[in-house]
Each structure stands twice: as structure tokens, then as C-alpha cells.
Length: 330
Image 1: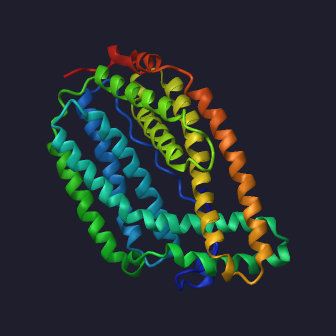
Image 2 (image 1 turned 45 degrees about the vertical axis):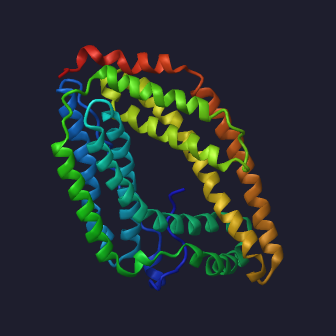
């Protein structure tokens, strides 16, 4: 869910909270097939760091919609960077790669609370759509007033300071990536790394697909997301359309499990704070709607995952390795 925030929760004037136009998403960086593979991978990873750095100005903005977009775009860039950096394992000093990824994790954690708060409010807005128009706004306002403070983040009190800290972390990551030795990166190693993660995703997908096994479903989502990002990154090394179609199918699994996770967060808070609502019937109706939607999402996600993960790891390895003859090796 990537809707604009629908309610005022941090003192921003109401007219400033109108839905902001969605900016065009930049295309993810890809490894160039004709280039030396290690250096092409480095350029792709540096491009994602630069994309995150560009969002620091937006993060320091006083405009709430601009800050929200900056958080979203920075998270996307960092996820792509981390997925690409994991392809370096076994080819470079593991300590160096781990140091870069720890900085990514620290940066992402500073953004997670903001993301969760925004998504909670978006989820509230979608659930409140079930109510008649004349009462929808008041119900949504009550729900946001009761639940939104649960996900408030102290970082929002000083966005400029937060942006300065993140900029420093990102610039340190950039310097580390310039120093990392990627000469040993080769097509076979990349294909093997992706196939191992594919094998792990198949294993994780064997968990029970219900709301009571959220930890297992989170692992499925994490593995599928990482593979999808890696397939896009290396898509020019092999049959591009097949790799991008595979990434798209995995992305649909990720999206459905992610929406279920967000609804689960809302469901838990509604149950916990039920007594604070003036009309318990409203809570009951929202919980019923959430439960129905979660059931649909998990059923759809399992069906899609069963189809896309049907292929064995050896098949994925072969598919990714197809472009080896077109890529330069160290």
C-alpha cells in the first residue's frame, strides 16, 4: 500500500495534507553485460547509494508529503543496495561487505518507525472505506486519534538532524564501496548465490500459510523480495524478459504478504485499544473487514508463491548463468 497519508497527526495544516502527486520512480540500477562484471556491480551499487543521498534534502524538508516520499524512496534504494551487496559474498573480504551492510541496516532502522506509522494511517483509511460516506470521516478521525500515536517517532521532531545523520552514514557507505575489491565477482558466483537464496525461499514457503505464523511468512517475504531485486539487477546478463517476469511474480507474493502484515498490525492495535472507541460496534466491523481481507491475501499469496517457486534452484541457476558468454570476467 502506497497511498498518501489521509489524516493530520503531527500538526501540519490540513490543506498541506492533500494527496501529493506521486513522483516517477527511478529505474533500479542494473549490471551492464558488456562491462567488467565487478566494476559494473560496483557502479550499480553506488547508483543506489547516490539515489538515497538525493533524498536527504527531502527528508530535511518541512513539508510532510515531501518527507514521506523521501522516506519511501530512500528505503527502496537501500533495499536494492543490500540485495546487490549480498552478491559480493565469497568474492570479497566478508568483513568489508558486512561493514557496509551493517551501515545499511542502521540507516534503514532509522526509517522503519516512520514507515510503520505512515502505513498504519494508510491502512486505517482503507479499512474505514467500508462505512457510509456520512460517517466515514468521523470514524477515521477517531481511529487515527486513538491508534496513530502508537507509532509516533521521536525522529520526526527534528528531521534536519535525522537527515544529517543519514547523509553521513550514506557517504561512509559510498567510501567503503569504492574501496571494496570486486575483481573476483563472476557470473557463476552470482548465479550460485541467487540459486542458494531460491532454495531457501522454497524451504521457507513450506510453513503454514495463516495469520498465526507471521514469523514464517515474514521470512518468505524477505527471501522473495531479495531474490526479485537481485534478478532485476542481473537481468541484462541473461534472458532479460524471463528474469524480469520472474521478479515481477515474486514481487506480487511480497506485496500480498506485506499487506497482510500491515493489517495484522492494525488488527492487534484495534483489539488492544477497543475500550477507547466511543462505539464498540465500529471496532467489531473493522475487525471483521480486516479478518476477511487477511484471509483473501494469504490465500492469494500462497497460490502465487506455489506457482512461482515451483522451479528448482538448479533451474534458476541455469537461467541466471545464460548470459555468462556476454559478460567479462576478472
